[in-house]
Amino acid sequence: MRLRHIEIIQALCQTGELKSAAQMLDISTQTLEQTLHDAERQLGFLLFARVRGHFQPTPETLRMQADIAAVQTQVERLQRLADGLRERQDPGLHVVCTASLAHHLLPQSIATLRRRFRETPCILGVQNTDEMVRSLLLHQTDVGLSLHCPQHPSISSQVLAEGKVQLLAPQGWLSPKHRYIALHELAGQAMIGLEGEDPLSLVLEHKLQSLNPPPRIHTRVQTYPLMRSMVAAGEGLAIVDPFTAADARDQGLDTCPLSPAVPVTLYALTRNAGSSSAAEKTLLEIIAHNAQALLSPVRE
Image 1 (tube, rainbow, N blue to C red):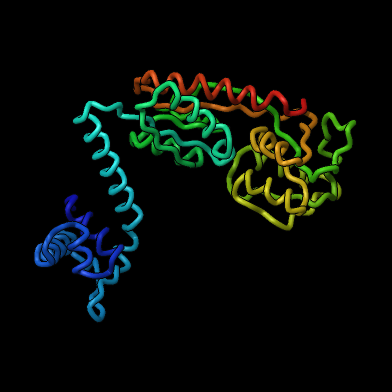
Image 2: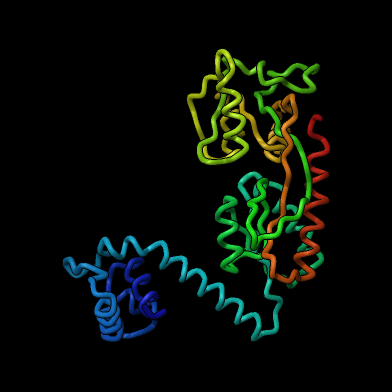
């Protein structure tokens, strides 16, 4: 399959019409239709069903759509890089982080970086750790920020900061004497659960379910920031990472560490064979400083 085939498939998926897709690609409808026929002939199956003048993707096309979109995104990124090289611009930084770090830590750190590297373009995104590893290996990302170390042979990890897992509660739920809270104190409490395969959450949930009685979990969410929002809405308690807890404390929610303490580490993930730019090195220094400052007011 040629790149032109991918562009045409993407355009037809977005517009559903031959004329609109041709206008999007700045080609004639005859050229588009001929290229589409070439692609279908090469693949051996229809890519679109023609229904009353509209092009509807076939099941085969729908199965390929996510990969086609990924290729298109990579081509666009390559084009931006080529444009920058032609104009002798800084190629920039593509940084991704987990949801817990996207609310405060990464935006504030990028803002500081921009004051020192004004001409360095930045692209920011949110991914889980598995997605980070894939995008790093595919050279789609320069740096990943995660609370988990993936232990991948081609990925390097650098420790930027360390903190402790925190209990999150509505304002006033914790008394001033609560410098920490033991897991057994959560027996029978209404709590928010975390959906998915987060390693830290899986270990803690196993311990919570062994309590007598176990916590009552009626709602599960996919991210720690959403857990924070559910606690703020009065739906129960939550066990979260220290960065989410720091943001929650600014909202007036109660936080304190668990006992025994459960450590959490912030890692910067990069490719082993990659060379770091001055902007990337500076950004990691800024993030480490900001992370440590953000965690220092959290109750120990």
